[in-house]
Image (cartoon, rainbow, N blue to C red):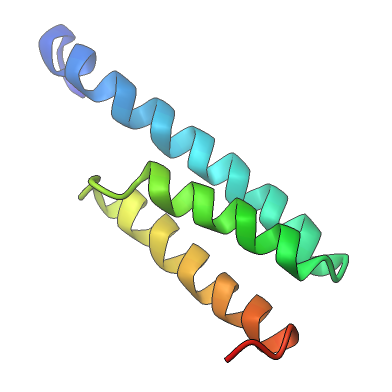
Length: 79
């Protein structure tokens, strides 16, 4: 988002990324507390917020959430 026109276009994307990163952080706290099912919900919401985003930061966040969900499912023995 280098100029005003692109900033107006990127703003929703930036807000979605920030919201997803916050959800991931909340999921991480729940994961650390052993509340795996609740953590999965946070990770799923974070991923769905970024479903159509292709920016590298969005892809990284989705990937991290996917891996964290896998860890939760293993802990819950849901494989």
